[in-house]
Image (cartoon, rainbow, N blue to C red; front, side):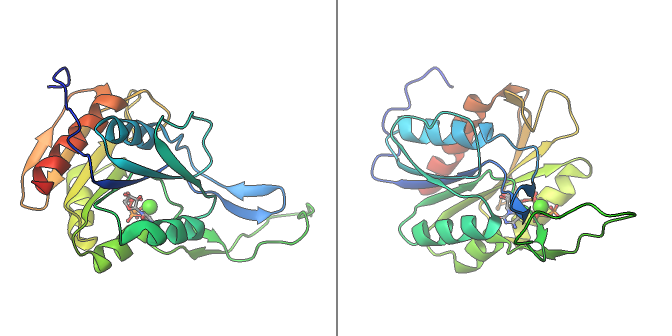
Length: 222
Ligand code: CTP
Ligand code: CA
């Protein structure tokens, strides 16, 4: 359990964690964002570093302190996150994608601040690349872990993403719960493995969950 020393079980391994939400500019002063604070990803990065891994944390805007021994790469948009992640991917052993990546971005980013006008304002959005899907397509030796934040049909949606994105594990959480998900210190997750196994955990700190995710990853790494 969490109280046993995990030693340096990840020594010699490179772990890439993404955290936080991406933001998508609309004009020089405005952006579209989401409620992710980065807590889950930063907790995973900290746990991985404490187990001796080389850790790269690709993070959207977050006010959290960078865990000791972790190399941070700061990004804003989904496309910047994609670039940063792909740059590290080949040399990475484990990818844990806790980031809440914007699925869409404004099609046009205004060069000047948009002025208000009478009536409605229509915003056209275009699709962002699905970073994790791309990693799944390019997967060689890497262990891939995704997250699925859902408000309904948690199990079905999570399993669908596990298959579609060619993941080894997916961590599913119901973000409609008050004590779990965005902005909380705690989370309640189910973890699904590629081979059909499933583990359901009670409400726990994000640090503890980070440790459990890494336990599964370590078993997979052998
Ligand atoms: N993800 C990603 N790039 C995107 C969108 C999502 O890498 N453009 C990753 C997330 O970091 C997460 C996983 O994919 O690990 C699942 O994200 P989620 O938003 O739950 O799923 P989507 O595939 O975007 O599907 P939907 O939002 O429609 O449920
Ligand atoms: Ca999404």
